[in-house]
Amino acid sequence: MDQIEFRVGGARIRLIQGDITEMETDAIVNAANPSLMGGGGVDGAIHRKGGPKILEECKRIRATEYPDGLPTGKAVITTGGNLKAKYVIHTVGPVWRGGKSGEAELLAEAYRNSLKLAVSKGIKTIAFPSISTGAYGYPIDEASRIALSTVKDFLEKENGLEEVVFVLFTKESFEKYKEVAMKIFH
Image (tube, rainbow, N blue to C red; front, side, top):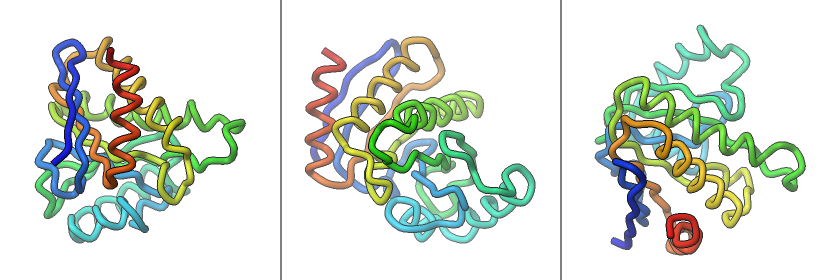
């Protein structure tokens, strides 16, 4: 398995190529759609592997907190169901609209709010996919820069997390994140 790691404060950041549904971190992050009802890509894979408990909790969140759907950039937490991870943090990244519609700030907010929620729940290890770069069409060059710098900035200010893992599904995604990380962390 390809991987690379960096340290920021007391935390370790790892980049790996793999399947996020196989991660044994305390939490994994789901690049969800606003409905929270599952979908394609990472979202569908997490719901399929995690089983019905995740969907039950998502339905409860929709009924009580977000009847109109989870807003872009916000994050909520559910059980991990049948996954190895204990929790799933669901966040909605922005759909790419050319970069002039606040996408960068919304993407950074999705990462930041997921990290804040993790710390508030005492989570020590968390794994992220590449949010918004699949069906939502966010260019991976820009998305990886935002993801990595947002996590770095967060870890420089906050204690509590021991490890943040970026789990990239394809070799191409892994290589792009690695290239960007070498600039940000050195």
